[in-house]
Length: 393
Ligand SMILES: *Cc1c(COP(=O)(O)O)cnc(C)c1O
Image (cartoon, rainbow, N blue to C red; front, top):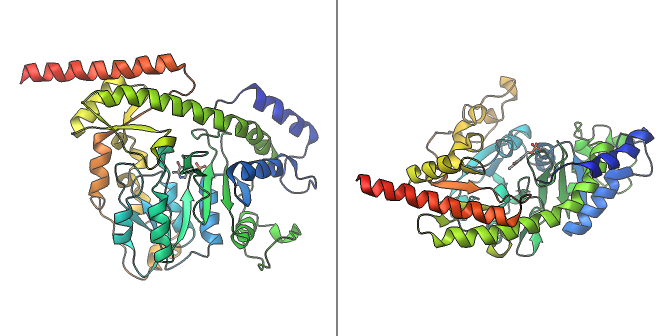
């Protein structure tokens, strides 16, 4: 996460002074338009649209792609609940797919979960770990599925030279307080498809038909909602965008240094990555759930076992597992072609991996020397704990 400070404060001051806080009504475009142009140039994508959140970007992407009642959307079993909730907001239902040891969707399970009702895949680049996009895109093209990349937790990361979020048909980013770009709350959608962009822009702004967009790709107006961002968010985003790549390069340096130390110890295995040369997310996998739990307990700060980050594990998504919506008649599970059933053990492979895996913070805002010291201490603590255990038995 990039810290927020004086630069953001200085950037929002002129916006406040101008009184032009809203996205529309200011014909110069303002900070939001500048951010979208710079973001698209940096990420090498045609169209970008800032929104109120990453969840909003996912919902707008699904609606823009024409996904709705009767459709099934594949989502991973390990992600923030918003990924699985977004299809429901569009009237479709989520189908859960296993993750593999890269902590992202297992392509072999994607194939298993495809039915005649499947319309889209939402691969999630989880915790700065990129998905196996080559396999996912190949499967999607074979089965004519739309790919909506959830890059909310991997803003700026690359997969084989391309930015996560720009490889599929449409990508969603989050700029909330816990993400690589941090403005408190915010999000964005990107796509190379002018039609998808026009529909997403209309959907995100209920007043779009009064804006006079001349580049609407001949799309008739569709009903929308209000997911707009404001110019204060835009001003902060312009500052944060400049911090993004330097921060990712600090992460990569720390990843390399820590990985070298941890890989040498034979008590844990550094988790695989779908693009190891650009890795900026570190996780270690143990033989047993107990060893992973002990490692997390020994270190506390900066280390946690993935299974214990409960919000991200599907077994804790009660409203989805119980198929409960705000109004019973507006429940997408009643509109699906077949009966959808969820069980707590439906993604057993994911649960096994999550129980044996710990994530290690890269400490990108700390000195490199401190981070390598901590990595050495992690190994030392683990080896003395396992020594004690072998004396005891
Ligand atoms: C944060 C996040 C979202 C949603 O972002 P918000 O901006 O909080 O709405 C979606 N998916 C994943 C994987 C996330 O981590």
